[in-house]
Length: 364
Ligand SMILES: Nc1nc2c(ncn2[C@@H]2O[C@H](COP(=O)(O)OP(=O)(O)OP(=O)(O)O)[C@@H](O)[C@H]2O)c(=O)[nH]1
Ligand SMILES: [Mg+2]
Ligand SMILES: [Zn+2]
Image (cartoon, rainbow, N blue to C red; front, side, top):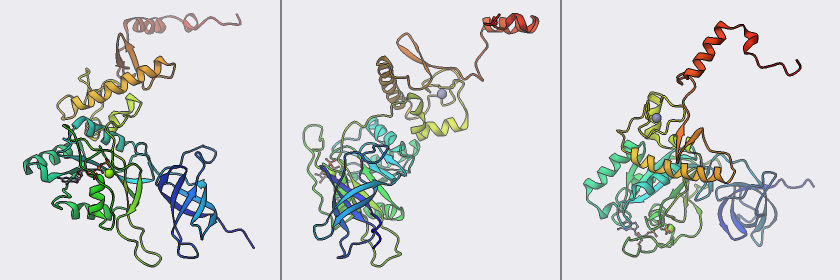
């Protein structure tokens, strides 16, 4: 009898050395979910398995509901933290109050979300705690930053149906991410009424979250319709909140993660090849955009980290040159003014016979 091909499924949760895998096709007894062992790293590339990964399974023990992950399918995208593979939309959740909305922290979450190359949606939670004018102000501000924003309240139910419709219209995995205590699990409970995820009140003077959710887990937004050939339901990932997402390590790559800046740079190029867009001469972006200062803050942090990396002997990120204690962009060669010394050399080259200017022949 030919060996059965490995079964395929999706990792929906990770727990210690195990992962829960939802099978594409149910097993003999209708079993859809298996608890599987996994090696810490898989395959030639030594990749770590993430929630959202598509995997091949072997050694299945149907009565015990157990199996082993033996292969990892190529990923279409990856959100680095919280680690979720094959995301098709990142939903950054920020609360309008309790905890108060921190614009810099929001920019960090948005920039991390941008690294996936997938659409990013901003959700403003706890809209019941602030005045409608403040909600509208933030929605407008986010639109100016280049993001679709939806305000919601799980307390009043406002905006939940609209958000469910937006998410249900998408395919694949939508990840909810954001600081602890903003109401990600509460929102999932509201979107999927059968879920009973643990939520906990914020605490302390700053009304911080209490890191209630400890693991990333995927949930279907709508229950899969019976029968084959139906479109798979959108999956939502609940993730543990954290307060300080890392920015990407390359200072030269940061501008591309700010849609508002991207828009300005698409309209006109800067004079400098690696312009910092911080009031540098010939900068096409200017300084009259809302996130100018926030971008500068992020940039200086990434530059400082890149400088440290260089100090440790790693290659410098981007084409920046150290001048005293600050980093300067290199001039775009097409726009670079010829130095006086170089002009004199060029003039001399035109006048003198070619042989005089070529380097001495090592053989001669
Ligand atoms: N007033 C109000 N409170 C809310 C709303 N949504 C959530 N909360 C409260 O906010 C607190 C934190 O909610 P959680 O859902 O646990 O927050 P979380 O983002 O999942 O937090 P972590 O799991 O720690 O990342 C709970 O006390 C919720 O009841 C809302 O729309 N309005
Ligand atoms: Mg939670
Ligand atoms: Zn610029």
